[in-house]
Image (tube, rainbow, N blue to C red; front, top):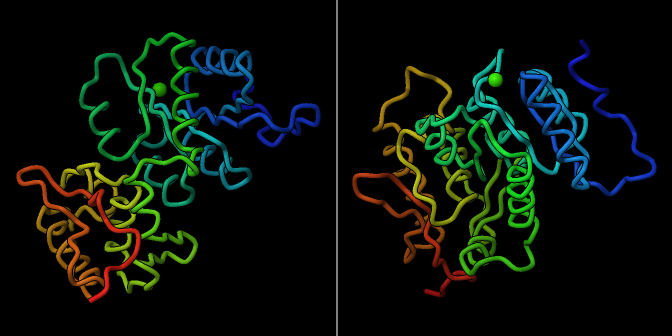
Length: 252
Ligand code: CA
């Protein structure tokens, strides 16, 4: 059975449909999803493995990725990290039924939504619409997003972050840490979630690694804005980016 259709098949008659990449190793589920999405005006593309997903996004950037947690070649969370390191695409996880751990880990890592199997195709399409609506509206963001957008600029290509226009000199892990926080202002990341999201070397996986890097990132932010505390500690939980940063760097 041919699992994946040609990914870059042109759609000359319907070029404006949002491309939804489905990463799912079960053909039955993928078929159902593709049918529901196509019926609802999306352009679905299906890949059955993490490797194929990475190849696909390199070819054409999707509007959204539906990502099965249980993939044959790579854990869905690991693939999520690799995808997010490449493109800033919204992700909806498909998790096994009743798997609370998967649900929590997915959301902590910064997934935009999740849905448990078995799901109703109609509900999934509604979720996809919601996530796309949320992520495609930079013109009408929350106050938090406005302030954060004004304070931070992330350049993934150069792996650089500017804070009030000042380029920060960040190490690899400092960059990953701050990038995760900036992406979701107000979202409290546990240390464990940050370790999973940012650190890929298991030998460095100690909670205090996160704390140590938060400390150095804070010092670098403080050098730009001495009176601000952009990274908030949530005692006993983890860290979040402040939602109330001023749009402009305060004088003095
Ligand atoms: Ca699976």
